[in-house]
Image (cartoon, rainbow, N blue to C red; front, side):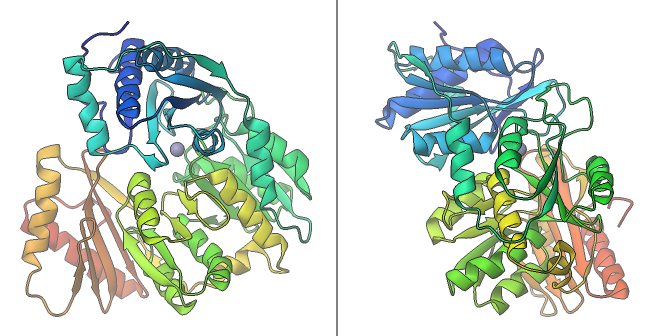
Length: 462
Ligand SMILES: [Zn+2]
């Protein structure tokens, strides 16, 4: 039974626990995480925890550690087995569990692994995760002898996804699972949904032999793009390694980013929930916030991070939220957690019930010029202070509006620029958007000057 334990200080992060197996993360760490988390669940009056794992080679070993730790804290374990992250979230609701732990390295290289957690129905993050460190160091765990039970949920999960498909015309769809944890569910969906389906790389393989499963990196979508063209498909859908982020390609081969997808879903959802709040993160295009307002909704710009967005959704009752990175959250007819498989079903359902192609839904939004999200190194000690200093330097300016919900987002006649510190890496994140080429250049120059003013070199692309 695990006793007092110290973690590598880098693994307890803002939204999850994550490390490199054999270097910063071991089976013993997993056991301490299980016992410490189980202690929190017990303190919260809970007794049952669902556990799932992705397809990484180290996931079964991490799972065994977590299960041992939970049981030693007196927690009964519901072992869901290999599944995407949203299936584990679903398990917490469906099985009325008191919490959940998903063992996943998400989109990271094969030697990474980690843990995403829920306590009750809410994300376990921030101070919750930081508190695990001292708890384990003191060995102040709950003690008991919990049971373990295997639960096969993939069938029930697939049924739940299909329940919200509203049929229309038949579509041709290419899916790319990238050898991540989504493969078996996608194959089951493809067999049951109307239309023609081609599924790429459904075999779960933690070495990711075909491409890296991270749809925010456009190069990872190349194979999908070619397959969409070859099949003359209506759309292409890709997932990250654990299925909580989506990437979409229209029939012309263009990527639809998370904010563009939210704009498309918002049309349907705001028609059914007039005046509702729709949330997007600070990296999202102004086009999206304007669109939500045009549709009669209340746009809300919030902090980047899936745990923060879920918390804000619960607080505001928003039926829809999304992040640029492809985390999409539906509380409309669904639970409100980020589920890329559910988002795929809703998108197909929406497209099937219009005569227009995917590209037309995309092109309905005004065209703007924007830079990608540019990430550049800045030390842990400096990154947050730099943003505060940049904000201070803008004080008293009447020609710009400053939104400081997460970093600084500075809006002027030309458009906007964003500077924020990443919560998960030692980087600063910058982005600019304008309706004109000249405006974009002026915004980049302003951002460059702002960084210069606090002694930080701007990235080359600015
Ligand atoms: Zn993910």
